[in-house]
Image (cartoon, rainbow, N blue to C red; front, side):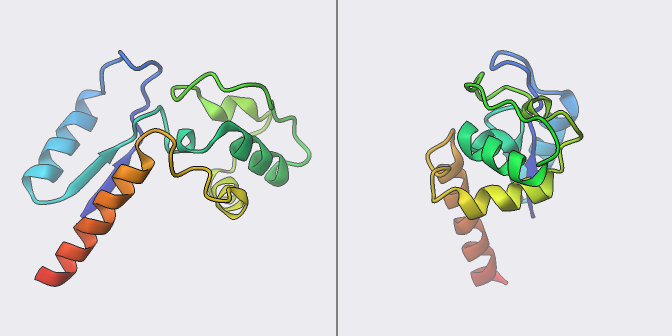
Length: 125
């Protein structure tokens, strides 16, 4: 099993919530692959311009703050004046990203781990 969990940390030095640490340990202990995001949330893997363009496309009747990034622990949902529709924004971002997201935070490394985990699991099953 692979589980991706938002760290939800407001700053890099903030501790992970105990439940997230426990889930990570239990999953690892049982042969799973835990992935706790390197930034605050999965949205932080998107370059800020890709996120804001996608959010504007999906939330065209809302205000979207296109200012500079505050870093990987920014709460990106606050950039949109309405409730952020995460899945449609994610789909729009992937369509328009032109591969720009692969070198954000640890995304390339973590995706390689996911691919390896799936390949090994399929060979053993």
